[in-house]
Amino acid sequence: MDSEPIQFYMLHLKSSKLIIWFDSDPEASKHSYILKGEVYDHEVTFDKGIRIGMSQSAFYKKFFDYFPVQVHYSVVVLVSCIDDIKQVYTFKDDKLYSVVFTTDSYWKVDY
Image: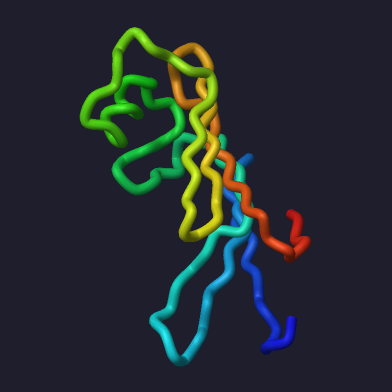
């Protein structure tokens, strides 16, 4: 990069892993960003109480005011156009099995 070096942080908990970095621009407020991640363990709790093992219907209630109860998907992908991140929620046996974060970053950073 043309600017100062970027420091990435790799977080691990059991089989879950996450790569994050902090934006330290002195002209803006500090932010952290997820570069890549895989969460498989129920000990990890996300915003709104999302966690591995929760029922699919409880998951839908966290994001939607109305969602047809008879509709069940194996995979739900939420895409943020602002932060350029995809959140991939995978379900098995009507329970949240994993959450995977991916970005289109030009940085090639791996676990």
